[in-house]
Amino acid sequence: MSRLKNKVAIVTGASKGIGAAIAKNFGLEGAKVVVNYASSKEDADKVVKSITDNGGTAIAVQADVSNELDVTRLFEETKKAFGTLDILVNNAGIYQYQAIEELTIASFHNQFNTNVLGSLLAIQASLKSFGENGGNIINISSEASKSPLPTGSVYSATKAALDAITIALSKEFSGKNIRINSILPGVVETEGSHTAGFIGSDFETKLIATTPLGRTGQPDDIAKVAVFLASDDAGWITGEKISVSGGIYGV
Ligand code: NAP
Image (tube, rainbow, N blue to C red; front, side, top):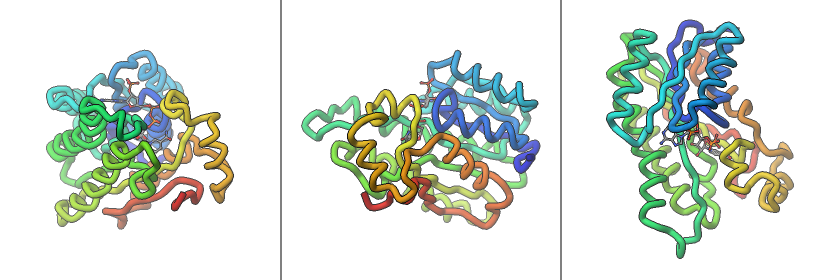
């Protein structure tokens, strides 16, 4: 299929999990993909190889999205490689579930700097890179933004902030042909959710039991929706928060 033929896309945090799946699906749909990562060069190179092995085009670019100079370099390297930009996916994110008594200022800043500031810096940079035809931004939020769980106060706040950014900017971009939407995944099996201890836990069992579609998500579940939002099929959708969570809303 070629729903994103010749589009240039940056996917932040694409060395693992949901970001890697989005990058690979974008590659399969004909996009030229910039696979961003923070520290996992080997994983990012594997994602690039998977895309090019399937006939696609991709490069890996290291950049910490919370660092303004890194973000500038990420967009400069994209321009150097592909000349323009059509799609930005703000996927890079961290989640640290902590009781309020255990909250540290460092953990607050880590989560807000990556999930919120990092997305804002990338959006700012994307505006200088989008061409005459406008652009397309997809923010990977979380179901936690509207159904926060105990110990997730800070993480949920970062994702609620991201949703507010989506709505505010959809209006700010009026007349510029720049679409911006949030995807709100439920629990998805990724390297990160394994490390966080969600996968295989009692919490996951309870979640599956109360999920209408009866399973934990897989990265491709999210990536397919990202492809839709990035494509012209979603040409009249902006400022939306789209849950992709097997129907778990409200738990
Ligand atoms: P993951 O497996 O932990 O992978 C995180 C990715 O983000 C990695 O590629 C990592 O790069 C990158 N990253 C982290 N900090 C970064 C930074 N400062 N700059 C650039 N890249 C950075 O994560 P995931 O579970 O796939 O989650 C991806 C996104 O989906 C996050 O925004 C998360 O909040 C959201 N989400 C996840 C779930 C879930 O259940 N998994 C549910 C709802 C929402 P390195 O490998 O180089 O460190």
